[in-house]
Image (cartoon, rainbow, N blue to C red; front, top):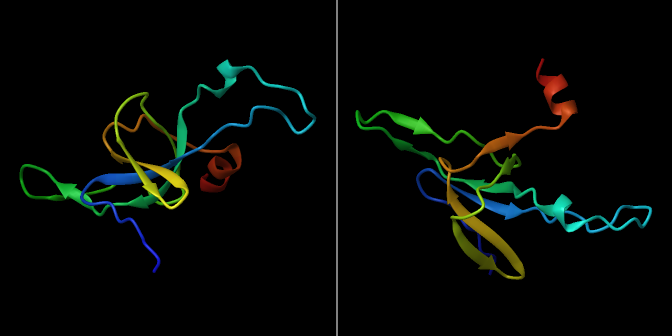
Length: 105
């Protein structure tokens, strides 16, 4: 039986991106280069409501790469993969590649 995690309200499910420890040519990278705490959004909740009752949709979508806060979120294990359940508000920024930005303009 296949399981699927579906976030509720304004939560997202993020799979952390583990940066490589060495380059394709075999050069070892220092640990400081691995400090960027980023992840790929794999599931998004529908959103939330404000005090007036108006619906506010989530600001990220599946497939986005985001910069995560150092602390926070809930670790979720499904099979052999680790995910983080986190509210959309503490997400620091959306990471876009340069080719994605060119396509939008």
